[in-house]
Length: 185
Image 1 (spheres, rainbow, N blue to C red):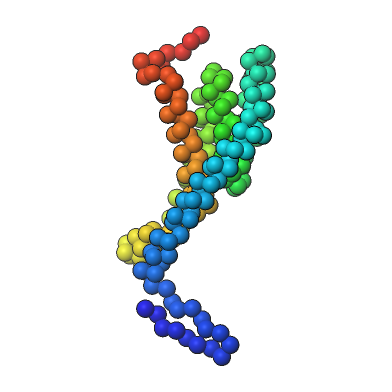
Image 2 (image 1 turned 180 degrees about the horizontal axis):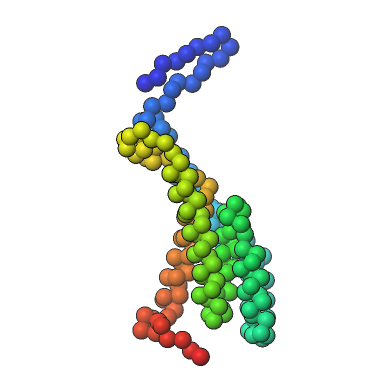
């Protein structure tokens, strides 16, 4: 335990031990998880109420005018939000991409590839930042990992991967494995 230092006007907090940091992490982890879940619920509601009609319109345009589908897809992928954009906006945009990919399957591979690239760029950035940490021994490194809360980017990548996995699960349930690899022309 750290010792308290007193000054004439206020008291400074005690020094935190490794056990304190782990204890704080254990207390805050459920709050972080709740925030992630609430963001996902809010993104889904916002998508359903505001973005879904736009998505339906784009799908209709692509189906009615197949020669314009490539332009719509190009614009969709060019305008993909930057990795520093807030997670909520990225979740809504990813949902838009998933719906379009599902409704216009001839462009699904390209759209999913772009989303995977985005997830990978977030993952690489997270790994690069973690490598910059200087540790004198493995015990310090493992204690820091145990006490670390999710960063904004880590929460973002977690939500995007979860949404991506949900999409893949839905697509697999729609198309039995015996039909995988065969495309209707």
